[in-house]
Amino acid sequence: MTRDYAWGSTSLIPRFLGTPADGRPQAEMWIGAHPGDPAQLPDGTRLDDHIRNHAESALGDHSLETFGPRLPYLVKALAAAEPLSLQVHPTSQRARIGFELETQAGIPVGAAERSYQDCFHKPEMIVAITRFEGMAGFRDVEKTVQILRLLEHPWADRIAKELDAAPPYQALHSVVSEILDQRGDGLRQLVSEIAASAAAAEERGHQTSRTSGRRYLDRASVERESTRLFAQTASLASKYPTDPGVLVTLLLNHVVLSPGEAMFLDAGVVHAYGSGFGVEIMASSDNVVRAGLTPKHVDVPELLHIANFTPMPAPLWEPAALSAHTLSYRPPVAEFALTIAREPGDRLPTQGPRTLLCLEGELVVSSAAARHELRRGQTLFVPHSDGAISLEGEGTLAVASVPVS
Image (tube, rainbow, N blue to C red):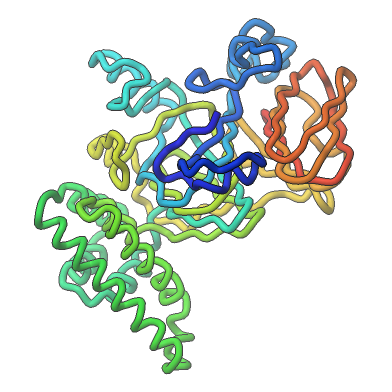
């Protein structure tokens, strides 16, 4: 089953699965054992139930002893046509606290007005299958100040001055708090004015690049990012004319991933995916604290409490090459790693639970226990007890696993 969130693409997942598009947005295809939407085995058994009832053979000693009788990661095929919500994910400690506080408040698990659906953290990584755009982490303040001044608007000039006058963490926390506190007609007017200023600044940037030669080269990094950013600002303002999140995105790194490139989002990193198709892998959790760019529940005080306001570069994650055509994406978390293989070979994870997703072509996956044919869009759960797996055919396979030190 796919989730039809409003930001989803109407075509990317149907094309991936080889099914007719029906005009509805299809945003996420969950592939895992999260109780909110577990996969089913061929006999109809829920994967989470199967793992709980056959924990040792499904998970192996390492995963079972570390995480208990549950699959610790969740894989998604994610297809965005419009920006996702401005959001952040909690640490493990804050997830436990937040889950307990909302439970004590009498908010049922699964309720739309709940931010903490479980008691686990949710670090996540997106690997681009197509060109993928997003926003993640607060940009270097000096660069943000230069970008804001390109808008030539009194509000942007004031914010730039505030960012320039205090330590970066303190300044960003103060500015974001102020932005997210705005409401009503004044906010609508400001978003409209900033969108108009962004459009004008984008046009000035194009003219500068055509006419100013050396001056443009000196400012290339700022103007390159501001051009993309200002186009995005105008687009967001047309969709969310009274949402302060539009203004917060001016402070975030604008990230563009080419196919195969990845971005890792640890706890506290404020982010919003923009557009594109990718494979997302995360700790198995559905905890999302939102502050804007969404019709869903927002919790601004909680986001301000748990967000990391330390400026950072765009959080790109470089894979390690296991062979000429096999890449391993292993960010610094215990729950998950992702291997992408584009040719037959023996460099695939050999133990623990593994979740396979065929990204293109037709493949045969074999183990001592079974032999399975996969084509694009099809998935397979391989338990620990099946041992090593081998790959035949022509295609690309993504393999999620629990890393073993």
